[in-house]
Image (tube, rainbow, N blue to C red; front, side, top):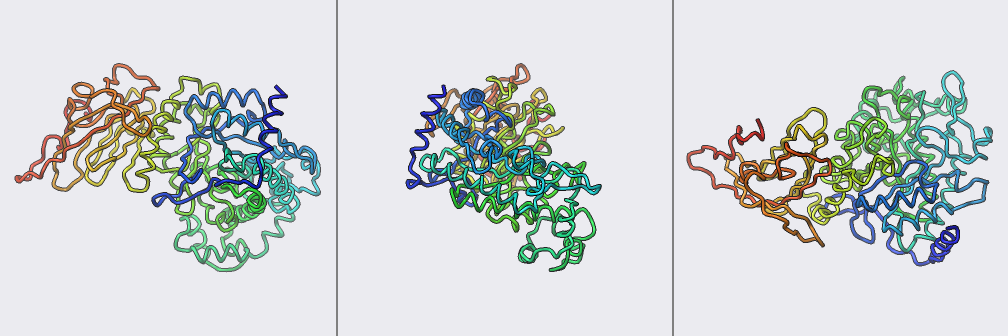
Length: 566
């Protein structure tokens, strides 16, 4: 096995650094920013490995094989400063070589996570030579003077050492992957921020905190004052919207000033690393956020200074060379991801679905919603290689359907012709509107995580895919015109073309084939499986307006009467 890996490494290393192809980039596509690979949009259907999987050849091989069977196109895997530079100035890239080779073997793309100075608010992946030198690499402190195992974000020495190692990593990545572009993006650090206090209280930090807010941050706030995140705008204005002063003079005597202070210096630290990395291999660089728990919103309860939504403006000012701020979303999914979707911040969700909290089955619905409704550049459940994601996990059928639908999704991105839905909480139904039509969605009580996607492929034609819901089409026009379904087909998309498997009618379709679709088409109250997936195409007929102004039965607010909305 060692000879095989050695051969793979030699093969990878033979790629000429002078033959760099069209590297992955973030580009506009029909009004939306998407990741482009080889010049084409590439929405990532991903999965993130457990923290230590990528350090094992056998575990990674097994994981990548399973991911391919799930129809993923991208694996997200950590690499660490600790493993790459165990001795200062001595680099070991064998793990990187192996990950790239194993991903190629399964025809997967990669996103690599640089666990450097911080991971989840701590400094647990730094090399031993960094940990053991407290003078050269100082730590943060709490109010009571307790020194934490967290590298100070004010440490020039630490940021330079991290940036140097990261640059070496990115240079090696260019040398082995500059042509093939197996690695699409890199994440710098992981869920950084300070836990247990709102800011660093060391003597050095207190000294810096007493100084004026950097002019660069003040200029950014002034230039973007009309488009700031609501929390930032309110905090600044409440303190008088000053354009200069100390942190407390500008942002007030409270936790808000502490969090902004920490965010600024985390951002500056990370931007140095991004600059060093992009100088070697300028693929997209991003950071990720441990988001705010609405029940415990104070900084320090979540990592203070991390790239959460309310600190987005600070991060944009502090780290302009970071391409996007990604959201790790384990609760309040619909609400939180919206906060990270801005014109200057394409949405990416590299972690979701908390297995440790019992969230074991929601990945399919969140993938559909992220790609379809939120038009994210990618989605990934965390721990995709955990034993819970066995061969019968429904993420496989969901990703297979999304893979088939992707050409249509990309064709209609940014045009208001794609909508997604899923049940979150106790809701039993919802409504989605298109220009001429509205869709009344009823969730099956028997289905734990119902979800679906609707694509308008023509003026009166739709494709609907999902599980555990019925979708009734009605007119969205004020004159209450009736709507008839003229044809419903269940099928699949093969090589970009619709392939009909069967024509549906009667008991398989709401209203005996006249009102919409059921997902799946066979009475789901009799039998349900999490792995059910149905893709259906339907054609509609919009009735001419009635001269008497009355509504047709299919447009009546109380219709249908067959139990769909009872």
